[in-house]
Amino acid sequence: MSNKIANWWRSQQFQSALRRGDTRLAVQKLQEIQKSGARFSWLEKLFRDKLQFERYSQNYKKEAENLSCKLHAALQLRENPESQVDFNILAPNQELIDFITKIYYLIYHDENKLQCTGIDERIFDNFEAKLVEYLHEEFRKIPDKQLVLKLQDALEDINSLKNGQDPDYGFSLTPHVYFMKYFLENVYCTYLVWFLIYKAGLLPTKINILDIAAGPGTVVYGLALFLQSCSDFFSMPQMQISYYSLEKQDAFQFRGLQFWRRYIESGKNPVNAYFRFVTTDIFAWDHQSSNIPKNFFDFIVISHCFFSDTEKRVQANNIYKEIFTNSLKNQGYVILIVQDKKFFKYYDAYQCEDYEQEKRLVSKFTGELGLELVWYKYLISTGLRTPLGSGEFAKFAKEKLPKLQYMSPMVQKYLGQKYQSNYTLDDYVILAKKS
Image: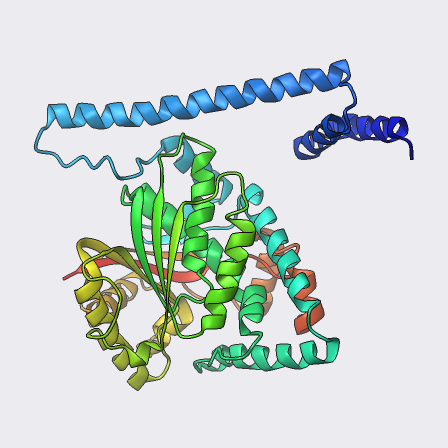
């Protein structure tokens, strides 16, 4: 095809995209026309100028909002000199808060129960597509017969969760199966967790995080995607993230960092993050020989690393308490994320709409870790404390919940799943501090 015909075809695609309101495709075609060296038509010039104006306008709006937040804080300090105004905290932006509340369909049914049935497709669609692309490339390196066997071993191990057992997570393709089955939903959850921290005015611009049983770094991915949302609404200050991963399996750490470099660091505005990997079994923890910094972390996060076995859980809790005592800043916070069914199973309790029972159990859970409860949220897709039956939930998910449109075909192909996957939530998120 000659250059003249190719450019004519690009121009037609550009015009078609404009008529459909597909701005992303129109921008892509405009860039292709520019790269080809062809002259823009009057319509293409008009669209280019419109984009430039919107970009300048948005930058001005972001900077104005940022200055407004600083001015408001300065006025507060002047009126009340004894107040503690921390300019190192990322100031909550009401426009962003309203946007996330709307696009994620966040509904507070009461003080603690928060239903979420939406998603920001601009953030998560691209993230999901790039993860699928990465996994396909990884699988192409493995002969088909070996791939089937290795995936089966890893899947059987991870599926032991359904039987109330604690997986080993030690197979060569365990990180890949985790990426396919749980990673995206857990990043979705941690995105909302960081949103709640930000909304409460607790997110520092220089933040030190210790992630216990970190897996591939789900917690820091959720933060990175949330900061992408922030950058769309205001001029971001220079963020600095120090992320310590404490994880038993080095394969999880390696794959998590590999995808981070591929996706996060290759983006337009990469997150300024420093990684430190400590590869050790939590049950072999010894704070005397540990190289984890003392009195250093703003947040210590434990996401889903709470054990079904009672003896293991008691042992782990004692180790967690020791880490909190030694490594959490005095003004720091602990974030605990625990799946609802597992949470109630700990106390031989039934999930129901008994709000008072829930509060008692959350306080007990927090106290057993030597912590003082600040607040908690029950993040749930259905808006109910009582679980739906499998058929009812499948119908609800199909009608109401965002789909994993790129990952579902992959899970169906490689793991034999028969249904469409959705972004779902069923976690208790607990914010606590030292007693």
